[in-house]
Image (cartoon, rainbow, N blue to C red):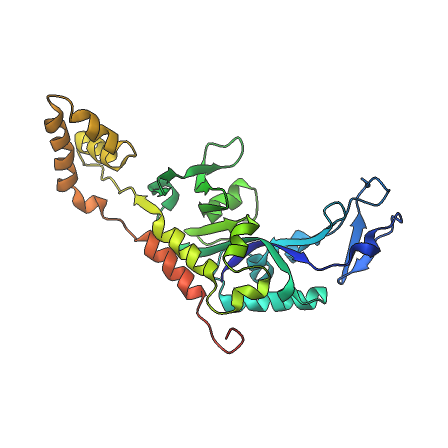
Length: 312
C-alpha cells in the first residue's frame, strides 16, 4: 500500500525515562533528549529524538504524560528520499524492514495511530486550476499557503479522514523547499487520523497492512469511486462570449439552482435552451482530457501488485 505519513506507537517500557537526570538517553539506536518542562513529580514531560531533514529519518517522541512512545515520518520519503514517485506495497514492506534494522525492534508490531495513503501521478496540464471535486455533496476547499492567494490543491476534512489532491511542485515552491518533483507532478491522498476507523478496517499494527486483503484498501477505493471529479475545458480564444458564459454556467456548482429559478420565469425555457444549445454545440470541449477517477484507481491498484510469499 502506498503509505506516506505515519504515526506509529512502539511498545516501549518508559521506566528508564522516568528520571530527573537531564542527561540524554540512548535507546533504539537513537539519542533521546529531555524536554525543559517537567511533570508534577519532576520528570521531563517528554523525550525526543530526531535526525536532520536530509536523512529523512523518523521523529521519536516519548511522552511521559500520555504514557506512550510515538514515531512519525513519511514512510514514502523514508524509503525513496521524496514522495514524487511511485511507491509499491513491496517497497512499503521493505521500508518497514529497514525501520526494524534502524531501531532494533520489530516495527511490524508497532501500533498504527495515523496513516496517510496516497498515489503519485503526472498529467501534462494544470490540473488544480481545471478540477473541482465533491464527496457526498460536500465541496472541497482550496489549499493555500498562509497569506498566499495561490491555490495549489483541494482538500476536504471529514470526521475520521481527510481527502486531498495537490500540485507537488507548487507545494514545494510555496514552502520554499528544493523543487525536485518533475513537471506535472500531483498527489492524491486520504489521511486517516481517527484510530476508530483504522481499527474498524482491521488495522491495529503495521503487519495488518500485509495480511490478506486489508479492508482499508477497499475503503480507499470506495472513497475515490464516490468522489465527483469535474474537469473544466480548454476554452479556445475564438469562442463567442455568450458560449463561454453558458459553458461556465453549465459547469458551475450553481447550474441546478439556475435551472430551478429560470423555469419559474416566462422567458425561462428560452434562457435554459440557449445554455443547452451552447453545451451541445461545444460538447467536444467538455470531454475531459483524462478520467481522473480511473487514473487514481489504476495507480493505486498498480501499487498493490504483490510478488513473492511474504504477503501470503
